Image 1 (cartoon, rainbow, N blue to C red):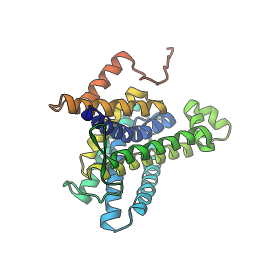
Image 2: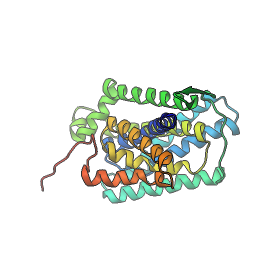
Image 3: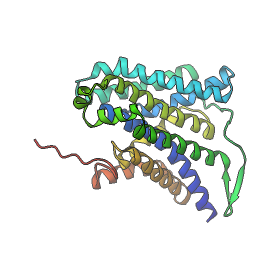
Length: 290
C-alpha cells in the first residue's frame, strides 16, 4: 500500500506538469488550428532559461521564474509573428512540418549554448518529506501538484471570465464572426502562442526543480501528444484529465511491471483512444458533409 501511495503521488505530479504543457498545445490548436509539434521543446527552453538565470547570472529563483515567463512570452510572439503567420492559408501538412522544424531548431539551439550534459539546478521547492501510510512523500512533489493546480485554475478562470479569454473562445468557435464584432484575430493568435509558451515554461521550471535540467526533458514533452489526444484536441478540461491518467499509468507501469514498458505505455494509450474514440474523452465531435 505504501508503494501505491508513493507511485500515485509521483504520477499526479508528473501528470500535472504534463497537463500544463498540454494546455498550451490545446490553446494553439483551438485558436489557430495549428498542431504544434514544438510544444515539448518550449518546455525544454523554459527549464534552461531558468537554469541560466539562476546559475549563470546569479538571480534569485523568484526573479529567474519571472525572466523565464518573459522569455516565454517573447518566444511565443516571435514564433507566431515571423514563422507561423506567413504560413496562413498553406496546407496543414506544410504548417506541421514547420513546427517539426521549429522543434529541431530549438533543440539544436539549446545544445549549442548549453551542451548535452545534464545540469543540476538549485532547488526552490520545499525539501524534505513526510510519511503517509508508510510511504515517503517528498514535499517538492506535493508543491509541484499545488503550483500546477493553481496555474491551471488561473487559466480556466482567464478563459471563462476575462475579456481576452472570451475573445479567444470566440475566435476558436468562428473566426469570421469574431472579425465582424471587432476582435483582432491576429492578436488572438499571438496571445495563444504566448500563453502556450508560458504554460510550457512553467512546466519546464517545475521539472528542472524535480529532476534537474537535460536535453531529455524534450522527450518528456513528447508525452504531451498522448495526453492531448486522450483528453481531446480542443478541450481544456481534457488536458487535466488526460495528464492525470497518463501520469498515473506511467508510474504504475514503472512500479509494478518495469522493463521499460512505462516509456511506451502513453503511446499504447494514444493508439487505443484513436481506435475507439478519435476525438478523445472530451473533444468535440465534428461531422463534415462533403
